Amino acid sequence: MKHSASTPVWRRPDWWIAAFTAARHGLGWWRMRRTLTQLNRPAPNIHPPQRARVHVIVPVLWEQPQVEAMVDHYAALLRSGHVHTVTVVTSAREDTERTHLADRLASGPWPPTWHWAAHLTREEHDELDRHHTHRGSLPATVVTEVLKRRPNTADTVTRVLSRANLRGLALAHVHYAGPGRKAAQVNHAVETMPTAERDFIALYDVDSRPGRTVLDATHTLIARHRTRHGAPPQVLQQSALFRTRGESTRGWERAVCRGAARLQSLRTLRREIPALNTYREALHSPVGIPWVDALRCGLAQTVGHGLWVRSDTYRRLGGLPTHTLLDDLPFGYRLTIERIPVEPVPSTLTAAAPETLPELLAQGQRWFHNYLDYPLCALQASRAQNGTPLARTTALAVGGYRGAAWLLRSPAVIACAALAVRPASPWPVRITAAGALWLAIAAPARTLASHEGRSLTPRAQARECTELASGYLLSSVGPLIATARHLINPRRDTEGISPKSNTIRQKRSR
Image 1 (cartoon, helix red, strand yellow):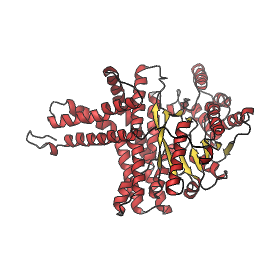
Image 2: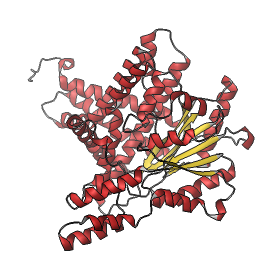
Image 3: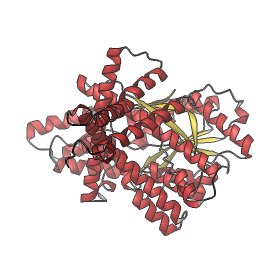
Image 4: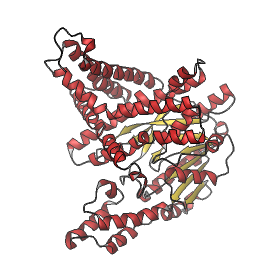
């Protein structure tokens, strides 16, 4: 559409694009600064008898190399009294998936796509590659023999827990015999555990390493809530900031992954934690007008690691949702429509981020399925009559908006960059677009560095801004691929083999 020089700026679509992007990132930067003032404050020590009883559950699948380090970490927490029991949940699904993987590798092209290669160790990949090179194809017997050499996770857990130095500790191993994924594993473990109503079920991934700082902050939050309200909170969420280890051999790939990790950390600080705070405040101080209260609540987005749920609440809700591919955001949807508060913990984990471009794109595809499953969450809630129609509709709309914002994150940055340098754009448009880029990249990069105790030189800031910009440019690629695949076959990614990464990493608390 062409515009004459006399066309008011406010009637131009390009100005609205720049203005909306600037407003969104300006609000995000303000929320980020507000969040950082609340995070990582030293928590006072609490005498062990005052701590809530915490039962950690760690579901594992295709994660043999990480079991021993995980068990050692939680054994130390058991000895210190920060947690009371730890249950490792393995699954018979791994044996089924091993057979499925063998069939797929024998019949499919070589090298396999990232979706399939992620389940192979480097040694398995190299050996299969040698057979393929020499023989021209991969015989099914060879693939089966190579995969059988790796013990399954259940056997690995049994071996590790039999060590003498772990005797007397409340470490348990539960095996799930059904076909379900992570949510079904966790639900099965909870069913086998005798827990009191006010105990907490704490969910962590195998590579999570919650330390004493974040656990002390969580116990302090529980104690304060009990003092003020007469009961412990129903749900708590420990959020994460993200870092890479620079494992890629290519410099440009390391830079892109660093930028993507910082972008994910910014999302935690600008969106995830502030949304949980807003949700909690809206529940504690409703205005009494249903549609206004529903909009103020928005949508709580819980994460599947660092999630603590009170035992009675967990059982009343029927556990984690098993009708969706992932359980993180669908569980938050259920909490929102039931108006169950979520308390964000004022301390963060540090989570490992993807180290290669294929892994980064695969992660984006996997995580975006949370948003693609929101309609299914709403349908399931409607059939079960969970929540009110207004709560279900509002939460679905908010989830749709957030999914659309993720899909448009890369195009919005590209559009603002083009408008900022386009000579034909009026100066108000160019200035607004440049301001949007500054609020999206430069300002939060410096604020995040300051929070991490790093002083940026002009050169270092230029480098980090460039890396963050590359993260923005790739941010929407994974979601776009996931959306396209979902439109072609909505149930394609709920069958076969679970999405996994074979890279050994850890989520550590700060």
